[in-house]
Amino acid sequence: MDSIVIKDLTYQYPTAEVPTLKNVSLTVKKGELCAIVGANGSGKTTLCNAIRGFVPIFYKGDISGEVLVNGKNVQEEELGTTAMDVGFVFQNPFTQISGVAPTVFDELAYGLCNMGIEPDEIRKRVEEIMKLTKTEEFRDRDPYQLSGGQQQRVALAAVLVMGQDIFVIDEPTSQLDPQSTDDIFEIIKLMKSMGKTIVLVEHKMEQVAEYADQVVVMDEGRIVMEGTPKEVFANPKCREYHTRLPQCTQIALELQEQGIDLDSIPVTVDEMIQMLQEKRKN
Ligand SMILES: Nc1ncnc2c1ncn2[C@@H]1O[C@H](COP(=O)(O)OP(=O)(O)OP(=O)(O)O)[C@@H](O)[C@H]1O
Image 1: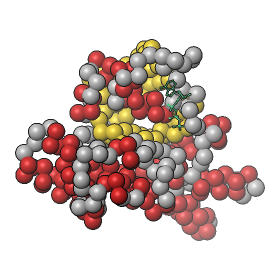
Image 2 (image 1 turned 120 degrees about the horizontal axis):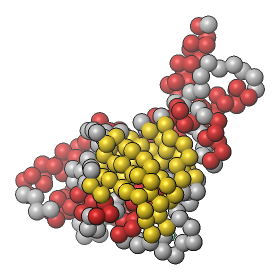
Image 3 (image 1 turned 90 degrees about the vertical axis):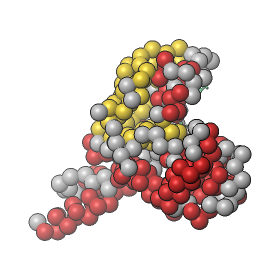
Image 4 (image 1 turned 180 degrees about the vertical axis):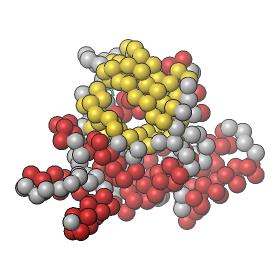
């Protein structure tokens, strides 16, 4: 089953002279992680905003084509209704925090309280998600006094607790150090294991190669490449779109350019190890 279906979407902001999204078509299957990559300004965030219905309902502007989320046309929904189906995580966790909850526990409970869920059920769901996301250690702390990485973990836990099936996560690790980035990807891995559908904008290609089922490369508002991480990153065309490659892919391509014969181009460290082991055997 498909969670998100985008059909020939063209969108222009009211103040822009040209469309920001041009004839974008994309299908994300239920339970899969679709990574959107591409240069700054290529339209990744605008595409995310189209999935959650903010484009055009909030931003206005001209739109043609369709965005279906769980079979519903988001342009026909009222602003905010799509949030019942799609959980959204922003680049800056500071903007995600409600500002009304004195502790991390209350922050996680806040959205559920607004939905009118029974207190016992709220407590149960919050405890469970805090355990799964390893945010228990912050439970009594003020969300604003956490580090950026800790805040981002809380932001992910706060959307996960709401129970939607689809998450749109826009550059969650852009301000984080390597350890905090790994912590965020542990939660993304957890979301995948729970069968969630994820659209992730991310510039860290090692993690994209490891976790994505589908990679979409955007350039100047168009989808210019699409496929599995291997299909996209091992294709030399990828380099034309200002997209950095996973480090091991980069090394393999450079070895090949130096005349070293490789049987395949790896996109993850595991694949690279396997390839070198097989080469040693032959
Ligand atoms: N509210 C707006 N009004 C007019 N133009 C906008 C608006 N928001 C974004 N744009 C323009 O749309 C284009 C795509 O922006 P968008 O933020 O979607 O790109 P992006 O790929 O997410 O970039 P980044 O990697 O820098 O976050 C840019 O040229 C940007 O200036």
